[in-house]
Amino acid sequence: MDLHKLSLNQQLNGLKEGDFTSTELTSHYLDRISKLDKELNSFITVTEDQALLQAGAADKRYKEKSNLALDGLPIAHKDIFCTKGVLTTCGSKMLSNFEAPYSSTVYEKLDNEGMVMLGKTNMDEFAMGSSNETSYFGPVKNPWDTEYVPGGSSGGSASCVSAELAPVATATDTGGSIRQPASLCGLTGIKPTYGRVSRYGMIAFASSLDQGGVVARSAEDAALILEAMSGHDSKDSTSLKLDKPDLTKGLDDSIKGMKIGLPKEFFAQDMPAYIEKSIEEAIEVYKSLGAEVVEVSLSNINLSLPIYYIIAPAECSANLSRYDGVRYGYRCENPKDIEDLYMRTREEGFGKEVKRRILIGTYALSAGYYDAYYLKAQKCRQLVANDFSEAFKSVDVILSPTTPGTSFKSGEKADDPIEMYLQDIFTIPANLAGLPGLSVPCGEYEGLPLGMQLVGNSLEEAKLLQFAHSYQSNTDWHKKMPNI
Ligand code: GLN
Image (cartoon, rainbow, N blue to C red):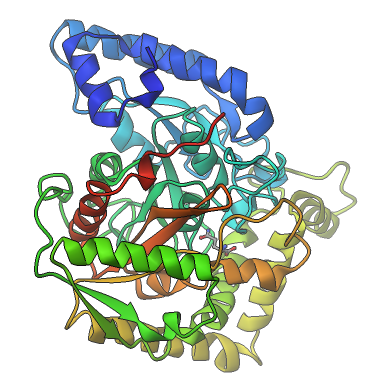
């Protein structure tokens, strides 16, 4: 049986009905990983033995009728989430030997529901990138065409779910790293409201922007897992004091009479004709379902990219100062003195893009430039957030493309940071405003998938998923998977 073709709910029912065991399901995915991942490089670590132990424990619970909510379902975790006793590298040489002494809340929550970890997925180093070419563990390939990038920084998660080496995977999004790879790999990816998912044990890049989420094959699958990941965590002071939301109950509710906003500033940009066409077709689907489409204005949105590339590097330079060769992680050989230890450890342990960000961030935070850059960026960030608040007075969701194009070839943008940064032009605003955003597949161009983005008001993940699900109940884009 092609177990990997079943949706998460179908897999869960199969386990409950005893059609197959979690050991069979888990082995099925482990076999696929060992056959297919040599080419894709989507995993940094495969936790085969641990996965089979977890699966066996789930099978026992099914037998004893004491099964948990997501018992025995396999999942892959982005290698940014600490997992006790298992390597957690964040895609960096700096953490290439790091075994976390504790697990992230995201891992714990899913483990408590009985989910089986298949392994840890490859990613851009410290989640900085949009192509998964900056990983110390080598580039990840896009299963739709292995000459192309899967997007980043959660490229390993997107690549493995798209190739059906895992039914679902965790991911993180600071400026687009869930939605952009989801778009480039034909998946559904959701970044929730900032504070919805605990950041405890999720290695920090830019703390005021980072947020955990999920990449899946449908909105229905994504809702099931995001719900289990969410909820207040006293170990993260930015975690919202809210219980976990019900994200599955309203999925089938009608969107009739609801309003979709199209930001005129996005649509004024030069867009490839194939993107315009796919977005127009998606809008027609929504209209046929009774949604109303209106124009909205986000007048400061063009400031988003410059704001992000001050704030994210500034926070990154502070967060990454902890990697000094003393406490944990990589340490250079035979340091002469303490200064040599710091300098060579960081010189040898970090890659080029990470160093670029640390330099920009340190500069932006330095005494003479703090007001001119960092403070100014924070003020402008508020303007972008205000634009969204104003728009959400009259619409339920905001629709746009997720990315400026389909995937690009490996190496094509690797030496041009500005071109790479432009990948996130549509996704960054939601991070600046702390809003939930998702990407769903809505078309294809020359054999490569393409996504549309829906951004919702604060805490309205359920509504976003309802919009995504109603689209997916009336279209087939999300059902297309690469031939691998
Ligand atoms: N591509 C963006 C960057 O490089 C976003 C990364 C992310 O969301 N983690 O910073």
